[in-house]
Length: 86
Image (cartoon, rainbow, N blue to C red):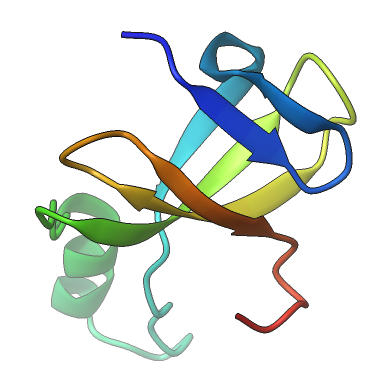
């Protein structure tokens, strides 16, 4: 399925120019238990609806950014660099 992703630097492009990096999650503390790290790495919430995700523009500016994407429709509602607030 093809859809457009709006790179904050390059503008709208085909999803095939990007690499999906997974959902944005709170990273455990460095001294967290192995179970906490396993949960962080392997457990995905896979929410139906809007989800905050990491994307990498591999065929363009080569920047990592975050996107709010509706997982039901693949509509990308907003994109921004991590240091920007939504």
